[in-house]
Length: 194
Image (cartoon, rainbow, N blue to C red; front, side):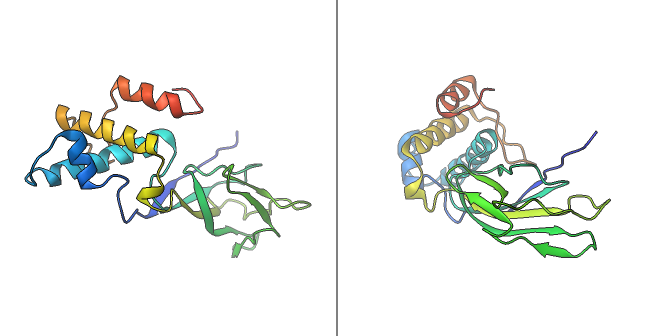
């Protein structure tokens, strides 16, 4: 049986949040600044939770995935895909070798898919090496202003529920539990089921 490992690592976190403090405070009916830190903690935890559930990234971030073997078509865990910043593998001699766009692979940004270039095949990797393939990419919308309104609204609804209900924030993952009502809103946008 062939195993298929795909560790996902956040390399560069977003430099801004999808919703401003002003937007969040207005949505959560928070007056003054005494609870800003707490509100922003919940907003970040809710963003991370939604990104993990939906396979999206709200604002421009860099991720790296590693593979044990080349799948026929690679679909990165995080979308929308902005660009590939590094794509390499360990060849049969054990040397890390970069793959070249349009020569070794083709990229469908809109569909977030990577496949061998026409008339090309994926190269052979070093035998016995774990995760010999490394893909680093940028995903997300270019700025907070570019994030679709329905996703911003979803994040604000979820943040308000977590903040008002004092849902626990997981110290390890930074996530919060997802209420059924939020799952229903997500299901309206998602192309897969739970």
